[in-house]
Image: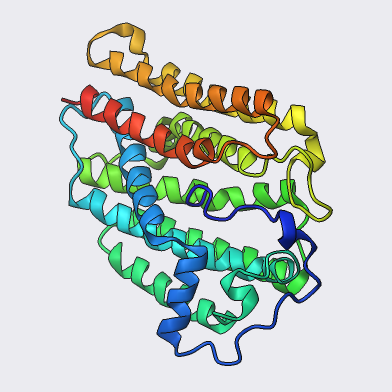
Length: 334
């Protein structure tokens, strides 16, 4: 899961740029300048900051709304620390993805910072190491959260190393690639749950009991992330080398899977929150709003004949999911 639409698929002129792309700058400047170029081109900070905030707040709101033991939840300093962790973690995941995609980007997305030489591979390795140390120090006071974020970072290192040094999984194997990357998101969401338990004093639960409780909540988030992952690569007519699920499933099936994922995410949320019970739980019906966003986008894509999924819906769907669950959490525990 990355900031929505922060990395569009290759299309148009970039898709036919000769191998190697334009020559990178002879002198990309000092390290600080190179890292700023990376942020501007690969990790737009305003969008990423908002996305990290709504992810941490929305996921925690979902956890609070679904736990009957929580009667008065409000975001606190623990949630702020979790949001900062998510922001830095997303930055590190972006650096890892750019390193994995470098050969592809040099050929098909030569304007990206790493591909054009505005930032160097060693800069991103340094950024990952420094960022990982910061995250471990930031979460040192919560053992469960620390172990989960450490596991996520280690898994990312192994995944990137496997692709760069062993050539597996292949970059063009989009389905196996996303399946192998999904534990990164699962571990980050489990980290947010560990922070929630710690902040609410519920971290005395056994691992088995906590795991049983969080599984359907993880399903809500991961199904929503699946919708985002599919639609951001929906293209009516893929370019010659474009990485898209349309090549694997076909256009109709890809759109159906995307809509099904959004509907399933909302259905699991409703099953957990039971808004038909009335009272504060009635706010749970808000979980249906992101499905409306997805359905309207599908209708527009179908009727307009557009080449790609509406960008507003790509950018807006996941924040809508998280914001709705933040409101549900606040209302259900007031």
